[in-house]
Length: 342
Ligand SMILES: NC(=O)c1ccc[n+]([C@@H]2O[C@H](COP(=O)([O-])OP(=O)(O)OC[C@H]3O[C@@H](n4cnc5c(N)ncnc54)[C@H](OP(=O)(O)O)[C@@H]3O)[C@@H](O)[C@H]2O)c1
Image 1: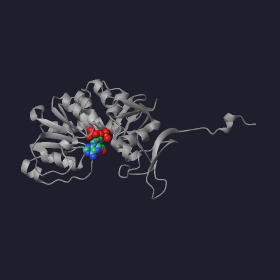
Image 2: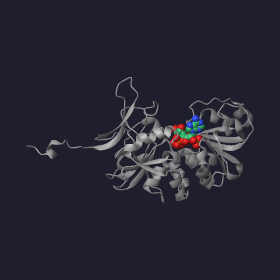
Image 3: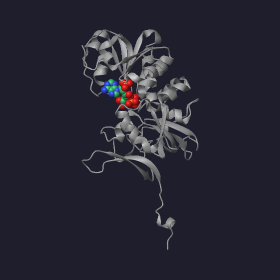
C-alpha cells in the first residue's frame, strides 16, 4: 500500500498573484497560485528572488480587476520588486539586491507580487546607500514618483523661497513622500487630505499646514481663483487638479502625477494664458536611469523615521488583494510593504 507521502502530488513552482480573465466577457480576477516561470519581453532580464514589494494605487486597481492597467493577460501583478539576483547576468552579481519601480513590471510584463521575477537590467538599481531592502519597497513607485515631481519643480526654478506648495492626496503614497521631501528641502508645504485623522501624521512629516479637500474645492470653481500656491504636486487629477491650476500664482507650476479622483481635466486655458501657469507631467514608469538615480539621491536624504511613518505595515503575499481593496476604499493609512518572508 502506498504511504501518504507518495500519494500526495509534489507542489512545484513558486507563488505569484496572477491576474487573468476566467471568461472572455468576465472581469479580470487575481488568483494567488503556484507558477513555474515568469516572462519578460526585455532582452536583459535578470532573475531575482523577491524579498519585498508593495501595494501601489495601480497595483490595487490591477488586483481588483480594473481595466486599463494590465496591457496583457494573464500577467503577474506588482509594479515594484526588491530582491536578490539568482544568477549573475547583465553586469549584476548573484546575491546582489536590486530594486525596480515601474519600468513595465506588472503592466506590460510579469511583476513583483511573486516569489521570483525577472527585472529589466536597464531599469534595475542596486540598493542606494543607506537604503535596506524593506525601505526600498516602502519607498517604491510612490516615493520615486514624488521625488521625480520634486525634481521637476526644482528644474524649473521653484525654490523654497517661492511660497506655499500644495500637495493633494497627501495621505497617499505619492502625496506623503511629496510632503516629506519638500519639507526636508525647506519648502512651505500645505498638505491637502480627505482624512482629518492624518493631521498629526502629515504635520510630523513636515507639512506647515494641513487642510481638507474642500480647501481646494470638490466642485469646479471659477477658471481664475484667488492665487494661493506658488506650485503644487497633484495625485488626484480631475476637479482638484483643475482647481489647483486656477489657484496657482502667476508663473507657477503644477506637477501632475495621478488620477485618484479622475483622469479627466475639466479646466480652461485661462490659467495658462492669463497667469502663465505651467502644467508639468510626471511619468515614473519610463523614467531614465539618470532620473531614477537622482530621485533616490533625494529620497536618501530623508530621516529613517519618515520611511517607517509612511509605510508602517508589512503584510504577507497572501494578503495583497485584501490590502488592495482596503486601499481603494480609503481604509489604509500609509503604504503597505509586502514581504515574501513573513
Ligand atoms: N505618474 C506616475 O508615474 C505615477 C506613479 C505613481 C502613482 N501615480 C498615480 O498617482 C496617484 C496616487 O498614487 P498612490 O500610489 O499614492 O495612491 P494612494 O496611496 O492610494 O493615494 C491616493 C490618494 O489620493 C487621495 N484621493 C483619493 N480619492 C480622491 C478624490 N476623489 N479626490 C481627491 N483626492 C483623492 C487620497 O488621499 P487623502 O485621503 O489624503 O486625500 C488617497 O490616499 C494614483 O492615481 C496613481 O495611479 C502615478
